[in-house]
Length: 98
Image: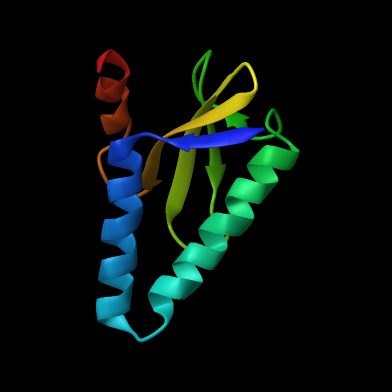
């Protein structure tokens, strides 16, 4: 399956990596490694993650308080958000209209 990040989701990744790097050297890389493992898990088992709406699923990172919000479209996985779990829930829903 192909993976496609919405632009705003990619910006969330970039922001998280920058913030974690500012906190501790190599912590941003650890975040990216955790995100990579999560995405590989999604690709291997796209329907295994928690369904949070009829078309959307959320897969949690194992070491960081983030969830990958995605939907399955034909032969692709579209990542809508890499959402911090302690922030406003479902803020990403507005992205569906864009």
